[in-house]
Image (cartoon, rainbow, N blue to C red; front, side, top):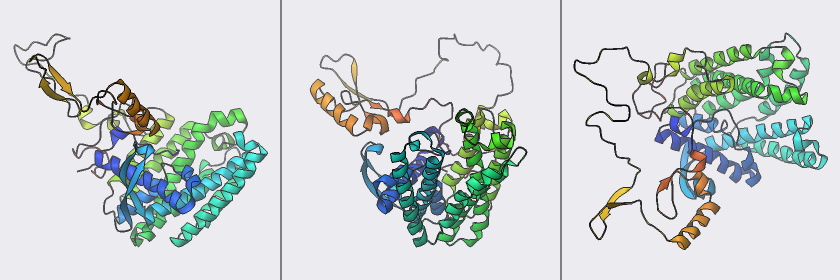
Amino acid sequence: MFGILRPCRHRLSDTLRVSWMAHLCGLCLALRDDHGHLARTATNYDGLVISALVEAQSTAVGGRRLAGPCALRGMRPAPVADGDGAHLAAAVSLVLASAKVRDHVADGDGAFARRPVAGVAKRVAGRWAEQGERTGERLGFATAVLLDAVGRQGEVESSLGAGSSLLLATEPTETATAAAFAHTAVLTGRPGNEAPLREAGRMFGRVAHLLDAVEDIEQDAAAGAWNPLTATGATVAEARRLCDDAVLGVRLALKEVAFDDGKLVHALLVHELSRAVTRTFGHQAAGHGPLLAAHPHELPLASSQPPPGWRAPAPDQPPPGWQQPADPRGPKKGKKDKKGHVPVWDWGKKRGAAAGCGVAAFMCCTCQYCCADPYHDPWTGEPKQGWCHNCDCDCCSGCDGCGDCCDCGCCNCCDC
């Protein structure tokens, strides 16, 4: 799985998190249904934005369906994105993946330097390009625009030298993403959205290209591979400035788009895109002061004097009258034991050693330990968080509907 938009589960509300997963799973299943199981390896976090844009502009074009159990969802059924939006996202992802594979073969990266691997990879890339083109034609989207833009990348790179503009290197990527974003307006019958979405796509492509260049600069230098920063002599600070400007450009362009429900799109293309810049360049406010990066209720309060007679509690003691709040996901208080002594805690069905081992083996084979959220301990029934969902980030939880989650003066990212 790859992409620059990787939202932490704690930064999305429950509704937006379910919607994000629906588009991700919908993209994966559309790739499988249209192009076979191998094509599912082209699933990526950024490609689902196409599906989300279609649904945000028209729920009639981008619908949902119930998918069966999947190991990556802890063997649980779930609603997934369906319709033209998911299939357009699949076509775009597949065509761009084919171009990426060809690029790896041409550069001889890693295993692609071996002749047998390179030969198989070329055939797979060619088949993916043809399949993506057929799907795109069915949806009225000319994937030749993507292939032409990616094909020009090598020519553009060879023409750049010291002192050249970084924007010359990002132009092919900008053109490809702009075309994909703009076609979502065509699919949904919103011609007025085409121009701003094209601009948003162009800025998004710029950020994606520059972040990839910054992340790979040391690796490319060690391998002697081409990198736009090294080739043009541009500094990381210059790349950061261009990324910050592009993030602002995406935000301004989206304000001109008419959405039926743009909450998820706003969360991904405004907040998560900005966080992607922060994550790549370092944990600093992306083009803003540190106070703007914090949530309003986390800003430092003005100092004030305590009331007369007030005494601070001991460091290891809670304030007077304080009680531990109940955990809604915690165990329920069970009945007292036969002697009427200490109450026992009941998380659900308990199993013996042998039965618990059998259930544990089943859960391991179905990926529930890593993917379910939550899974229940096979012996005690205690709910626990899947390994893939463990997060050590310092972000706040999903939006609680306060209306102040964004410094752009809107509440489009909230589930309220």
